[in-house]
Length: 83
Image (cartoon, rainbow, N blue to C red; front, top):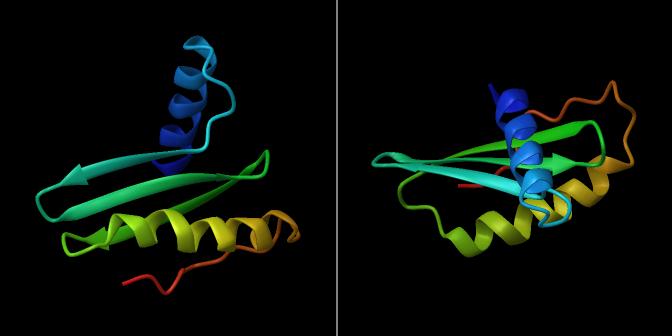
């Protein structure tokens, strides 16, 4: 589902001529799901509860994405440690 959300986000960004796709966030009563592009082929999905500080959502994964973008395609991070 993360890959599908990433693909749709990229298509929306392209069709709207808004530049490169960066991320998408789905919010619900219980929290949110954020999907971030990592390089050309990677995806980082963050699941967070309703108490999430949205500022942290955008600063911490950004640092992680920079590091993961240079990793081997076989490297599959499981958790960001974000609470």
